[in-house]
Amino acid sequence: MQEISCKLLVIGGGPGGYVCAIRAGQLNIDTVLVEQNSLGGTCLNVGCIPSKALIHAADEFHRAVTHAATGGSMGITAGAPTLDFGETQAWKDGVVRRLTGGVGGLVKGAGVKVIEGTARFRDGKTVQVSGVTGEQLVRAEAVVIATGSEPVELPDLPFGGPVLSSTEALALPSVPERLVVVGAGYIGLEIGTAYAKLGSAVTVVEAEDRILPAYDADLGQPVAARLKALGVETLLRAKARRMRDGALLVETADGEERRLPADKVLVAVGRRPRTGGWGLEELALELEGPALRIDEQCRTAMRGVYAIGDVTGEPMLAHRAMAQGEMVAEVIAGARRAWDRRCIPAICFTDPEIVTAGLSAEAARAGGIEARTGTFPFRANGRALTTGRDDGWVRIVARADNDLVIGVQAVGEGVAELAAEFALALEMGATLEDLAGTIHPHPSRSEAVQEAALQTLGRGLHL
Ligand code: FAD
Ligand code: NAD
Image (cartoon, protein in one colour):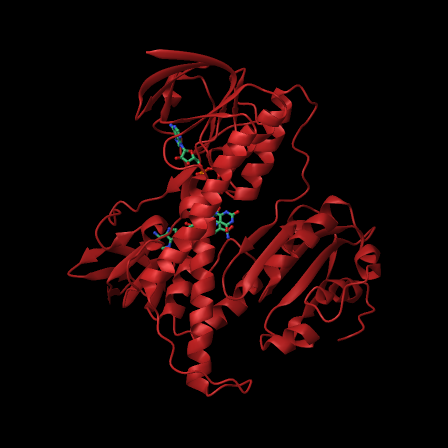
């Protein structure tokens, strides 16, 4: 068996692993990156990027359909649009290829050696890689585990046939006539809404008493209203049971059994850290629930073994994985770095979009912080009115004692692009006066942020 040695071995080429490898290469650390599938991981290949491409294509199609159907509320009329879904998929795959190819170039440019294969620990410093070109043994001074996560399967509704995980749902050759989505979280609602806009009859089955139960209830309201307008049926407090004769059997909130005929069933009930398949049992690592336990430098319980990204648990977001990857490379290079981020913003690409950064008012109260809040609705924002979508709002949460901004939430079309302003405000320790005193260009949705700050200070101008 061929043997190689390096200073750093990174297992997994997703956003966590490839960013870690690039930064390590820049720091002149002799680095090897092992990936068993395609560079870019879940995010670029079967997650963030293909889902956002599908969502965008669905928006474009739906807009054209709406113009054709209404005779043009803005004076625009369009002929009945047609959809070649094969072309849509080919376009989406092209976007993915461009990005994954780009990652390959960046990693190579940083001097990182990439091995295609599956890594398995023999001990904390030795990893066996099984690849197309045979077996290799890699000895490393430090190892970063960045193996990501995988979809959770329901025991009575295993993936296969009509029952899909997000991976298959993003790669369908045609738009299903009847799609049932189990789980009204990030994935279920993002992909479910896209297919509803592409023409599927969509039913969403959610175990909790509202959609997006991880978010504040009022953030989900504009999304629930839009789902209704799109004709999506939502069954709450409902339990998906199993498939029978081309239908999903569901136990509804009142205990009745309902049969939901379905061409496809997307099961999106969460993801779990990928802790299997790479030899966890050979190591003395500690777990925290289903995830690898790490400290503020992403160190595991074993010296020289680090873990980053989804394998370390919630929040399972690409930008968190990347930030951890960059930090760990520097820690391994000897820099004094530790996780000191004030917030990890989250965006849900529903219709309308949702953004959260920092604390909600409820979370602040639960943490014993006296907070005050101000909300500004997009119906009072000029830019929102000019786009024909004025649903949603921006809310700021600030400490009552010193006006420090501790949280921002928003729901509305296009608010994803406001997320970085929220994060920057929190990282820089902005106060309400800082946000209120920053000139926000007119007309833009960002003015709602300034107005929400003014509103919190009790001197709103446009409401
Ligand atoms: P991953 O991206 O999962 O990468 C892990 C890599 O490790 C994989 O490529 C895998 O093949 C490889 N690997 C595993 N085991 C081995 C082994 N033994 N040997 C070699 N290689 C191995 N996040 C966002 O922030 N924004 C979004 O909009 C968003 N949308 C999403 C949409 C969907 C449908 C899904 C499923 C996820 C989405 N996410 C989103 C989550 C995001 O994809 C993950 O948080 C992110 O990919 C985590 O990065 P990672 O590097 O930890 O792991
Ligand atoms: P999720 O945790 O967001 O939502 C799962 C939903 O399924 C919850 O509402 C839950 O109550 C429900 N549920 C659980 N068991 C159920 C059952 N038996 N029957 C009916 N409903 C049930 O999980 P997800 O949507 O699968 O996404 C997984 C992860 O992927 C997310 O937590 C996130 O980290 C990541 N992701 C992020 C983005 C983004 O950043 N925009 C997009 C997609 C995925």
